[in-house]
Amino acid sequence: MEVVIDRDAFLKGLQMVQNIVEPRQTLPILANVLLEAEGESVRMTATDLEVGARVSVPAKVSSKGAITVSARKLAEIVKELPAAAVALKVTENVMVSLRCGGATYRLVGLAPDDFPPVVPASPQSWVALEAKMLREMLTQTSFAVSHDETRYALNGVLFVVQAKEMRVVATDGHRLAVASRALSQPATPVTGIVPRKAVAEIQRALGAGEEIQLAITDNQFVLQMPNFVMTARLIEGQFPNYEAVIPKGHPGKLALSRPALTAALRRVAVMAEERNKPVKLALTPASLRLTASSHDLGEAEEALEVQYSGDELVIGFNSRYLLDAISAIEQDQIVLELKDALSPGVVKSVEDEGYCCVIMPMRV
Image 1 (cartoon, rainbow, N blue to C red):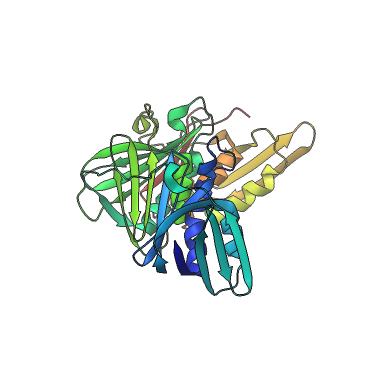
Image 2: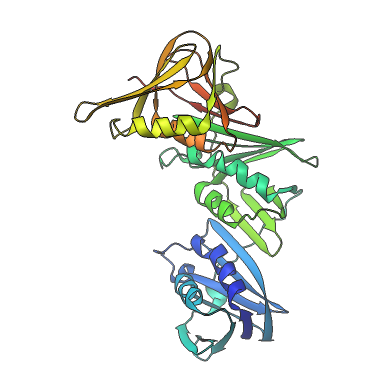
């Protein structure tokens, strides 16, 4: 195998796949990236047996072939190289010679025979959408994914494809985030829970302008973009009935500025107890008073002018959960819907009807 490849394209391709590689592997070859030269491109593949990704980069191929080398070390080397052509050649004893400018490296490789194949399923149908739209939906929900390994079904994002719209849903039992968007083309209804790691890699890989395709089969999620494909094994298990959790309408509605609430929450939460950062919200028709206190440190209070329709109310929330839900909204105006001190609150955007986050209250 002998190829010449542009350094910038090589680095971009490596960065799209290298984060899938786990540093500590039971199989040494899983710490490597598979390089395959054929035609006029080099394909780079990485997998941890659960999530896999493959990217193609244009190259001048003098002789085709394949080799695997350490993913992290190769990315480290290419990152330091000057912006010039990189010459790669596989020599005897599965060594890889790499030259760029005046720099020369010789890397120990592993034969590609034992590298697990990353084979996308052959789905019955694909869902076409814009990369920007999917990235927005995942930004609005992925923060609510559970990190509790005992609740396996919650360790991912639920994708719900319906005939004319797609929803993504995440929950950790304390909060639930839902983002939905209309689809430009009719789709075949299907659902699947995509693991947390795959969701992070999807967000990293998605650009702004391109059109992408995704598919969900019995046990696999597949994402396709030009010159890139990612596969992920779906999480088996029953996702909770999220529609039953979303309140159908709260009597109290509070409209306010997102930047103002974010800043006030951050200031008050400095004095909240560290474990779960509780903040108390006291509402009257014209004002919202935020308070937080700690036995060891003291207390903080801040008042905001708001538009509120509903009864006077005092309710407590984990300030981190509120900040996560608010940060997922791009627009300046948000709506907070509340019923009473024991019912969950709902965070929405004034303009974006496709997003809501339900947060369980705390006793404070």
